[in-house]
Image (cartoon, rainbow, N blue to C red; front, side):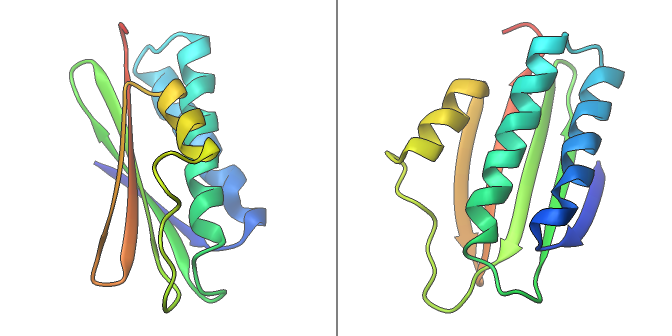
Length: 120
């Protein structure tokens, strides 16, 4: 597992996009799948940024499988904040770019999990 944590500020998202693309490339993902996962991670981060306190952090944990790469993006939620409805446009984009996508909240922390498959 590889984990990267950055401040919850849009100016830091480039680090998470670069880490995503670098890991996917290192694992042999083709260019189009690398770009799809990079965009999906960016979209997940954008979803979380509007729900996170300004002093919060975004953490992206990468899990490397035999033929998959999963990025789990987590952030604390502001009081009363909830993830967007699963039928929202952002979720449609994420589901179209990944083999699997899910989200959950535990103890005030939201996590969006995105999985890309090497051969799908």
